[in-house]
Amino acid sequence: MRRLLNFFAPSARPTKFVLSLDGGGVRAIAAVVFLKELEVRSGKTIFDIFDFFIGTSAGGINALHLAGQGMHCFDLEKFWSKDNLNKTMSKSFWDAGSYLQTKPKYDGIGKREVLLNSFKDQSLGESKKPVAVLTYDIEKRMPRLLSSYDSPGIKMVSAASATSAAPIYYSTQEVDDGSWLIDGGIVANNPSLLGYSEARKLFPDHDIKLLSIGAGINRRKISGKRSAEWGALNWMRHDILGIMLESSMLDEIVGDLMGKNYLRVNSSTGLVNRRMDDNSDANIKRIHLMGMEWWSDFGDQTLEFLNL
Image 1 (cartoon, rainbow, N blue to C red):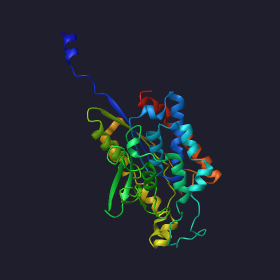
Image 2: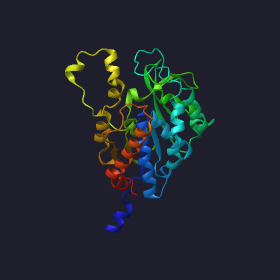
Image 3: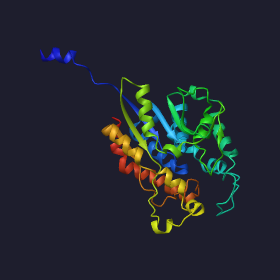
Image 4: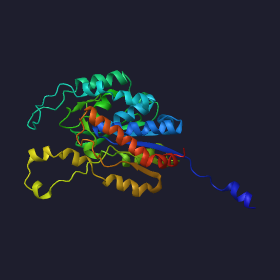
């Protein structure tokens, strides 16, 4: 009788795995280092492990490479080469130490060249697996996801340019449908909650497990007493944009919603420069070390979480 009951009992629902990648400029290289170790230890590619990819800003660029092209992390690490970083940060309009410029810090020409070289004419609809990147529509004053399933006609170059168009650093981007978009990090630098919501729509008959990888958190203390007298210039000097991007609220919400099906990989930036565009050799080395430290701290837990 027990065998008969077991035969008719409903089976456990299958699981879909989601990878969510934070923005953080050059600090997003740490996530690539971590994922490269995951590929080595598991013997599988990140493309094969995960079913849906979502990212913001530099994390969105990584997500587009991984899902759109099935890129191995060894090759993704090469995308973030010194030459490419120098191109993406070319022709600064700013004078050193100045916060009073009226134009974006970088003209974006080199950045678009690097993205074109990588994505060519590929559209989101041609992605090999479902992918979404977060942006913000400045004319409609609302967040917008550019995805392989809801906006397949948008070019990947346009999506990558828009999701990483951080105010101050790069100009607002016009995408293929005429929308004007900026970096989605102003809404949710950690897009995990959106990733969970989208995955439930894409895979309604599956359980969802989500791995979320950050880009380091700046824990440098700011003097409350001194900040009470700051105006725009001083807040700019003390990285107001970075402060806005570092909220942990969404992380806590998705953790409460998903429980054991959510794993967050992140840490303090430590010696890594808080600024998103420090591509000096010393800082890039520190970012790589941060990624390896993440593997030491979270690697075994991640393998178990992903059933690897």
